[in-house]
Image 1 (cartoon, rainbow, N blue to C red):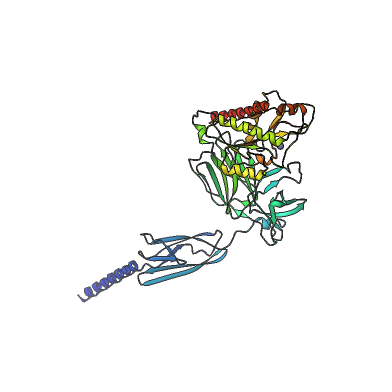
Image 2 (tube, protein in one colour):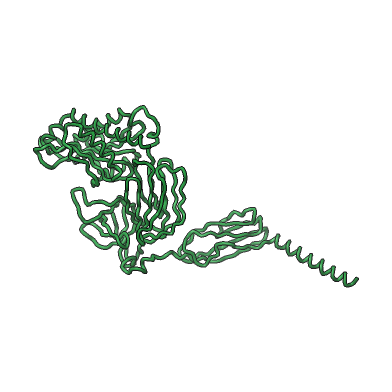
Length: 493
Ligand SMILES: [Zn+2]
């Protein structure tokens, strides 16, 4: 009996102890950090995840944090370089529990600095780009300046290798250099480090009028854009790929897919495969350290029937020169700026008769810079730009003729169909000219071509172009060429 009692009491005691232990645990589940107590990290986005007794108030670095019904909580911290103190405070009724720890954020170092002592040396001076900056291939120059590679966004740092006349020779990557006009870059104090980035995840989304690719970097890097008929390739320099995740939504309209290629140890290609045969412009630039590439959709109006051929399209029309800039002057004293303005009004009428909407870069005899004109078109969001000029040079005695120009390969078909219409008139074919370094057709935001109607310096040409009837005929041909182009686009969709 005694024995039995003893056994029973021990058993009972055991039960009481375990029940009370259980109750204790339920009442005050102590704070537990399950993620984020990391000694050293290499990315500045850091998650703190933990669990505490249900119904508590949680604060991380004094910021209130939501606690879920499960008792779990979490937050995302943005770490500074070096030591970061994290304090998690749990308030449960009258009691408070606190846990502190530190996380060291070590910024990834430029791997290339180890590989090569000439590259990524912090004693090498850097330059940083200003608004309107662009890269040139060489130190060469002509009437319109040296051959351009492409525009660059502002705030991009590059190593300065040399100074040649009014150009800075800059390093893009270990194996590639280029030139930038001095007025578009500023030398930074020595000691700044050459930017280096690992890429993280990308995304591709439809923003309504364009598809946008976002590549997250750790700094701003120079890029070189290659436009192929069905692809856009952006080579980002000074970058190592660490991307294992590219989110691509199904509602994309301009982009079929994106892909990547680490083509050199420090050059990453962002490859964008395009859906449509004809192109409507793109932009490349930075928002913070995010490289953003937008590819415009084909105007929606071209996918449905319309009463008039150019209905729903917005045209930027540019009459060359103006004001003090007279342009070419013909042997009899006619100024190019006046002919250009007269013709742009004729072209405006032709485009409007076909249902198009028009914006003029100048509507009177005033001079405005290429930058002002392109800013105007860019801000208005025009669908296409046509610049009208008259040519000069060559033989003054022979007919020289008409020509059209494009800068970017995707605008070749447009320049070609317009030229085909123009040469239906009784004029010499001076040619279809590509890679033309003229500022007004340099933007990539929209398709843009230049029409050099006739040569003011040629007597036979001058005689023709001086006639308003002939000017009108030429502009009718330009508008018909644009109409042909739109038909080609429609039938390709
Ligand atoms: Zn001109």
